[in-house]
Image (cartoon, rainbow, N blue to C red):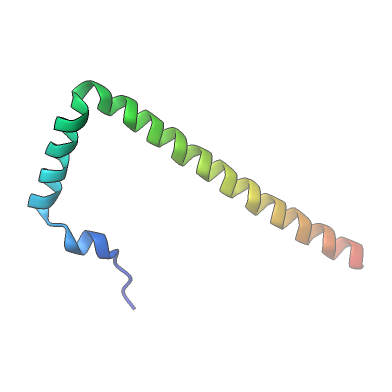
Length: 69
């Protein structure tokens, strides 16, 4: 099975260029780096939280197996 994101199949080059131009008009060139920094921080925090949850699950399963022995 081929799972391609539906959004990328719908958007063509012209639509992506139009979206980029609209973002430039709405936010201006000076605000875009600030927005990207905020987006990067949000993604980083999400990944940190995801890895913390994964570590807690692995620790709890390790503790459960050592207690049952």
